[in-house]
Picture (tube, rainbow, N blue to C red):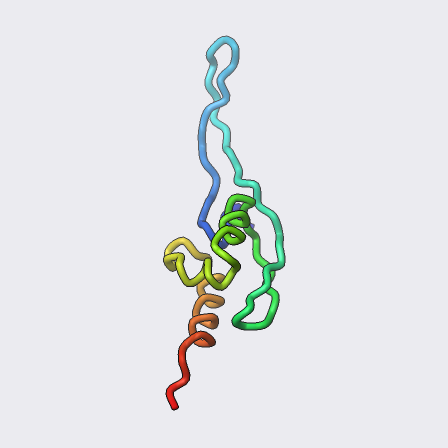
Length: 97
């Protein structure tokens, strides 16, 4: 399973361990990913996603999962999140009478 946030696209970063003798060895910095269940008000269902804690705070700040999906570009979202965004857009589209 890749270590990438499904909402923000945040992934691993590469850097160096630097010893006291200034020896450098490669290492990776992994995002703090959590398995969470978020509620979609438009769909009326809950969705399980793998989200970074920073992404989770951003979703809370914007006002929920639906608002986050609608304002985020598709290139940052995972395939699962893009499908969810498409479903939310269909539900929120005005019905022509």
